[in-house]
Image (tube, rainbow, N blue to C red; front, side, top):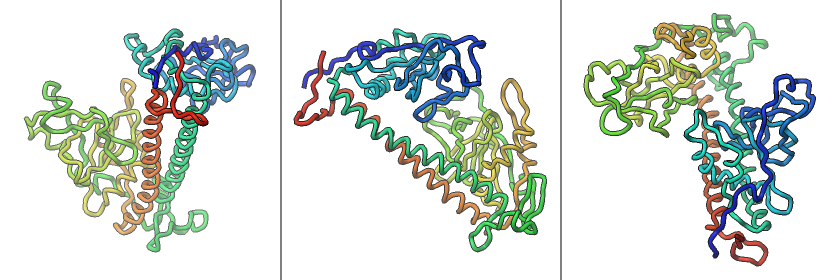
Length: 426
């Protein structure tokens, strides 16, 4: 097979860069074209905007690929109609009879590093018109481009369907969590009837209506320890090596897990261990961040977590025997708790801060362990479905990444009719 050739994007596509209109040209009465300032209006596939521009200054035509030219550089969407684009966006569309727009979109995606390199060194990440026009595109005959576009579109469709499923299940989970922590679960495993149908089963409390059998207690009553961590001196901290692993807010998630995908955690030498006693985590400890935004990240320490400590931006809840750690974890993720904390959080220098006193005073439903476990089982069942779809999404994303590399670098030949090798042109 001949060596694969590359040519700049401008050879295959018409490229237009955005221009921000004055405020007097923008409106919300749907006059002119919908206006996109940047990728904040991007959706899973197509953008959405409630702001319009009349007259439009720079237009991305229907079928174009919209590309962010300011941080985050390289994010893309398809234009499902004509859009007026601002300085944060560019757009490109294949020249008729020369190339395939979907093929070009994936070729630019594969070469995103080209744009990222050119966005560095400035005050904020941004690329120029020339940077976009000169993205290297592999040169394939039009029929090969069409075939590659079809293959990659198929997996993009599967990814979009999986993302839609995740969004659907997350909505279901949100509704379920509300029901579980306002109606509870009866011994037969069913939710109590809604309050509208059986008002005698409920009582009004400071946090809303809850089952009459429940009571509210301060977290400090149901937990043997509520404390925050400590941050070692900077000269004791490393990104890797021997020592104690320190968790930061980046390590917490919104689904109860711990994330070690990045090097956001620190390592401190095993010195002054007596000073670190309050920050050391034990299995079944529940963590939440007390500095944000966003607030509401939670994680559960398990036996498999190993030795970890928390820094001062994280609070630790250690449940007593009558409080299931998983139940407490899910309680901390409810909208009720999020509202309770947000109403009390103090804002300092753009940050939201919770105090230990706020954590200790947090109201927690006090109910029997059996019902706690029933609630936990229902919540975990929904969570497992979401996690399963996330795993599917990760597998599809990895598959797409591999296909893009193999097809767009010529590693795997694309067969058209009776041809068995991929032709390339200079």
